[in-house]
Amino acid sequence: MAASTTAGPEDINRETPVPQRLLAVATRLFAERGYDRTSVQEIVEAAGVTKGALYHYFGSKDDLLHEVYARMLRLQQQRLDAVAGSDASVEERLRAAAADVVVTTIENLDDAMIFFRSMHQLSPEKYKQVRAERRRYHERFRALVEEGQRTGVFATATPADLVVDFYFGSVHHLSTWYRTDGPLTPHQVADHLADLLLRALRP
Image 1 (cartoon, rainbow, N blue to C red):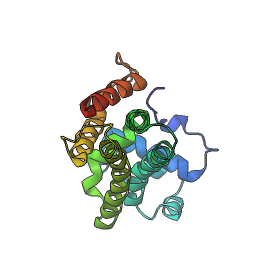
Image 2: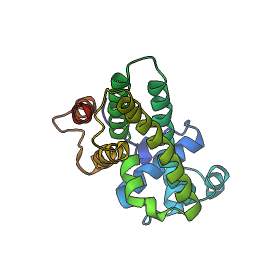
Image 3: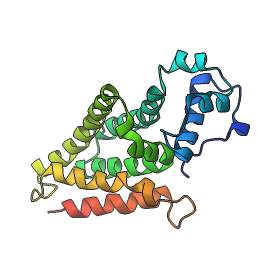
């Protein structure tokens, strides 16, 4: 599957519910211009709504920025929880989780790029909330590594924390180099990175 794209103002479906319409427009504008160079007025004009409508669903531009990332993290957390809780072997579960975070990041590349470029512009409260949400995801992922190390499936030479930090460092940089018209599909990139992780953990 290709990375998701957001529509321009002329392509916005006026039948789309207002919250989704606002998010689609905000995502496109934040990706094109940057969060700090996009005004609330530009967002509502492109979405074809009033400022009152925006503030009804999102209390501020800051709330829009937070939701751009939060919706992707919610999806990733739901999928990780499903994979981690399955009956597959720990190696199969970790590989599936490692591949999924790559695919979902590429499929929401604008969201990822916006977040890592603009995270520091969130309010202190929202920033703290996002860090807590990310920590929950990383802890569930790390638990798979720790399970494999505890049961002898994975090598224990490298602490699980470092393994996870190293892997997610690669994932977080996807938005800086991946191109939808490049030679590798999202699933091919995911397979390569997941294989690298599993090879590094073999005893």
